[in-house]
Each structure stands twice: as structure tokens, then as C-alpha cells.
Length: 61
Image (cartoon, rainbow, N blue to C red):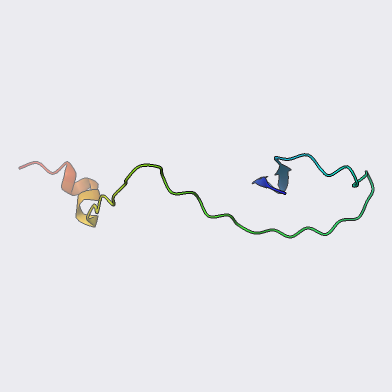
């Protein structure tokens, strides 16, 4: 089954099987699914640390 985490709860995206009823004890296994790659080409911007410093960006000449 698949679902997602919201706060401290697991939200299921599929209905439970018919053979599971209220009050049944179940065992849960959790694994992280890696994010899917984008369907289009991407690249790393490679911004250097100096470009992120506010003093350097707004420095007057």
C-alpha cells in the first residue's frame, strides 16, 4: 500500500483490502520512496557562496 506522512499520521492513498476490519491488529512496514526525476533535462546552477552574501550583492562602488 502507498501513502504519505502528514505530521505524525500516515495517510493512505489506496483503500484497505476487504479482509481487514476495524479492530484487526496489523503490522506496518515503512520505507521511503525516492522522488521521481523530472521528465525534462535539469542542471545544477552552481551558485558560489560569495554571490549569496547580502553585503557583497548590495555593496556600493
